[in-house]
Length: 292
Length: 275
Image (cartoon, rainbow over all chains, first blue to last red; front, side, top):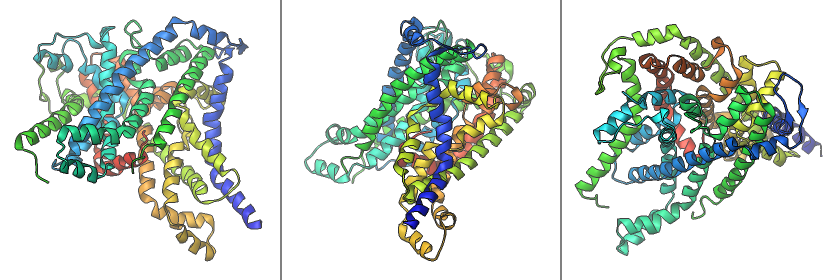
């Protein structure tokens, strides 16, 4: 009995600092966000309780639905493209006779570790409409120059390109791990049966890779739903609100208009959306290696 | 197995090389632009080679904004956070992996649960909290809220659980306390995991943008990412200076990454988590 009491005490001693830190800096703010979302507050005058007014206002606001729409356009543009390209690169690197795998893997991975803010400054320059590199390269293929970040139709496309660029390497690494987890014997059996490259890919690789694909897709879905830095540095939600994603909408309301209550409401709604996505992700990652 | 025909091999290699070039083209262009005359930047077709061979763009960008200061600030903050996280995450991870105490599952779930709360959601209330604690516009605001991370705790706990218990039991019979076991047995055996955790943390805080943007207002205390993007928005068409500043922010990390990439990428595929 004495022994287990000592264990009990020791255990809490070890975990308390981390536990308290998470409580104070994650759960307390989360609870506080919910609290503030029921108030009107500009941080100068005292908080005023308004009930569900912020929520009603939010759901009837065109700006909110617009920002959700923009976010989903961004997500739908970024996720499938980066997943397919990541898979393609992983499959090429997984060919047994390819040399320089480590080198290529590193080259493809560099954007992942690069700071998005600095990269966004560089992409601003690449997308410059008159003398930028992107328009120059397009002109070599006979494509007329685009206004990119100055054009309400093309600005979101530019952000999607940057998002895909940033994410391919991560997807490739996860797919590589998934591909290496597929037992060789399956392919050998298929070879004996005379299966050629494409059927091997379609009937062995893709089905056995599906848990990895699902995992990568959800992870990237959540990550691109949270897009903020590229928007903040490259377009600031513009031109004409065409890139006003939900995080930027939140940021503007909080720190430009000082509508703390309203911004907290946006945060709570965002949390609910992402919470459900994360639950799906946890379910998926548990089943991730079912074939082994 | 037999290699495929040469044509196929060529196609694969060419695809890989083109992909590698395309993905790294922004960095190439950044460095080339940083070594150009201002007038050369606007020539069409663009010049694919540097036109000046000194560091004048770098010198000038260091003069117009305190980039050296940003770098120093970022290093101080990122190293402090990394060190503190190693301490607190290791303690918690060991407690959760090895000590059987009442409430262990609860604490574990509570810590892991924070992974479901993205920083965008707590941005506003955390700012209010930090303001109440009178920490706005200080390094404390950049360090104290991040002294522990769920990801770090999780990563280390998973690793500690793979260490055979027998090693520890032997030491306990000899009368070793928990702290000594942690320090003399667990930590030396966990160096790869600790390194991986430290690298993630350092990188995340070197690259951090949203929180310093909100919480730091004075230029002298700003971190590199926010510093250079503010600089870029103020000196909008000064591409040579912007690219010089970006080079300073990006290249050290890429060089550093080349040395540690194996550990890093393998850490990612093991944990399947990011940033």
